[in-house]
Image (cartoon, rainbow, N blue to C red; front, side, top):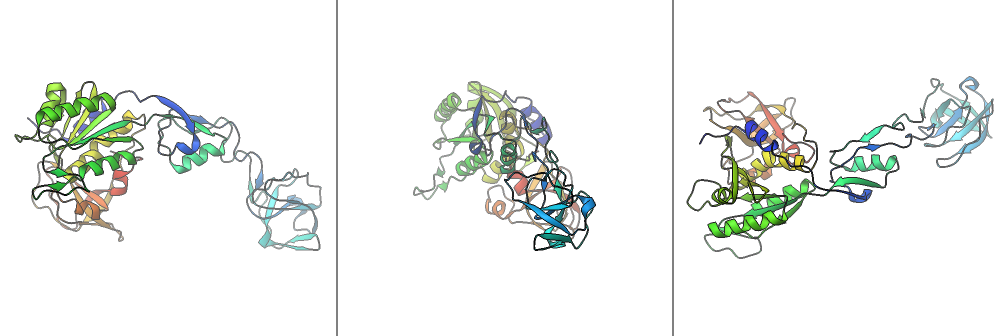
Amino acid sequence: MALTPLTEARAQILAQTPAPPAMECIKLQDCLGRVLSEDVVAGRDVPPFDNSAMDGYAFRYRDLPGPVSVAQRIPAGCSADALEPGTAARIFTGGVLPLGADTVVMQENALEQVGVVTVTELPKAGANIRRRGSDIGIGDTVLRAGQLLMPQDLGLAASVGRHKLSVYRPLRVAVITTGDELVDPGREPQTWQIFNSNGTQLCSQIRMLGMEPLHYPNVPDDPKLTGEALGSAAKSADCIITSGGVSVGEEDHVRAQIEQRGTLNLWKLALKPGKPFAFGVVDGCPVFGLPGNPVSSWITFGLLVKSWLLAAQGARVPELRLIKAEAAFSRPHPGTREEYLRVVLNNQPVPVATLSGDQSSGVLSSAGRASALAVIPAGMTLSEGDALDVILVSDFLSPASTL
């Protein structure tokens, strides 16, 4: 069976994205990390009135440089009287600009003595004023459906008076790890067992997307138990993610159970690490079969599964940022698969990428040290000093960016 290139696999997977989940209207403070299901339109100008951009004095420009008497004091949150000709108003940042005033002089450039103010440095006419609607106008769309809500977005919604937003229900994502060799942290392993890192890693990646992981107990290498776990998860989850059991060994049962209980749409990628990868459907529930090696699981989730999850959540799926860097290592032999290497990016005049350690798919420590992933296309050789594309790990993990 031919290996599927990453771009082709991603297109196939995204073509099978279901409709977003149900919508719900919730309080603004509970919306962080949720996906907006409708546009947010401003019902008020921001700012809602002309106001001072700093502490100082409000003048009619033709009365400058003075001296003129200070007729009123306008803190933020107070009303203002009209400014009479030949007078000024002491005004503070955010204070309402009085009718008739057209310029604010910062207090450092004005001298007030016994209720009379003189300007020591003339500003331009209209200086230091924030005009009504200069940030947002009535009817402006400030947030769009499909946007994953960040703290600044919630502040923006609050600035136009919204206290609730319509968002999609978070996806419920079942996580099933497989393998006789795995034991959960906190339990005493046998001499032939290793700690299960994929369960924690995958659940954490799902939470970072604002979704709900359903962490199932580890499944032994048994076809019947594997099939039962898939069937059980399909009843309660919007999608299933497994790790292990999708290669060609006699104890790899996940792929076979997907085929027996549903359909297998994709298997094996032209990707390193991450060749053993499956995508299919069991009892109407999409299933992603990820490799058992922890780095392969981490990579395939970030490059493929995350895009599908965001799309299925109703979120827009933006392009992932590629940064140019200089290689501090060589790859003299071309590979047959597109490769993603864990690197440390040193920000010099030109970013330099250094391997973060052993690149084996079972060595998770080099992923922990990495700040970026170097992208090596299939068939490409690399010499020290050559230019290459890298992806920041922060972008790779972030819900706001994906391939």
